[in-house]
Image 1 (tube, rainbow, N blue to C red):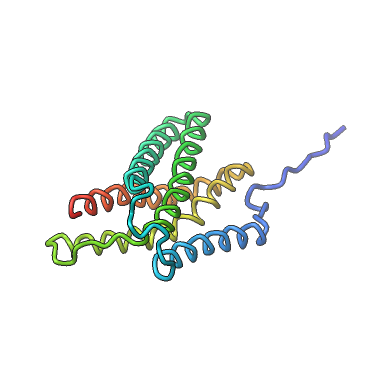
Image 2 (tube, one colour):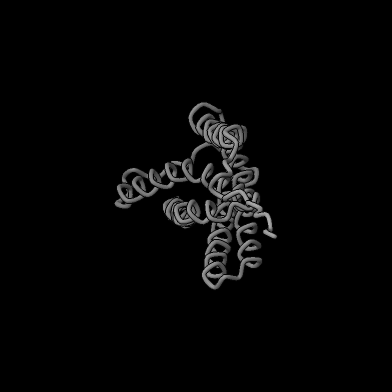
Amino acid sequence: MTTPITTRPHENSVRTPPAIIAAIIIASAAASALICYLVYFHAPLDVSGTHLRSLPLLNAVLNACCTVALLIGFSYIRSRRIPEHRAAMFTAFFFSSIFLVSYLTNFTLHGETHFNRLSPWWPFYWKLLASHVFLSIVALPMILITFFLSLTGRFPAHRRLARYTFPIWLYVSVTGVIVYIMQAAIH
């Protein structure tokens, strides 16, 4: 007597529904468009800058906390401590989410922070800020898709994408702190 062979669908045969990817990309594009609107078209609500003046510092602290959580999460996955890795990555996601709310609030109230173009640091600042902004736009959908793959149990795909998501997310978090420090030192 032979035992029937049961087949298990191969992980690669499970595809993410295009509607999910489209929703993530649309939500990411909407967030980027909102930031663009706040920076270039929206008149600040608190022109005097007296309300919630500590938001840029809070944003830098949140970016620093995200950086620490990312590095801890990376060390956990390297040592195959999956539950701890997951907790650390959720913590990084939490700090990034709170950062985004605080960042949008800051731009709504105060508008754009201008850097002194006569500073000898201007060329470095401009390049750093440009790379930070560009990669933050790229990072958002990557982070959301990486989380989606993990939460739906598609770990091989999650690992493949996380190899690119992690360094970009880390770079954006670290450069967010550096940009704050440079702006605070000039003002």
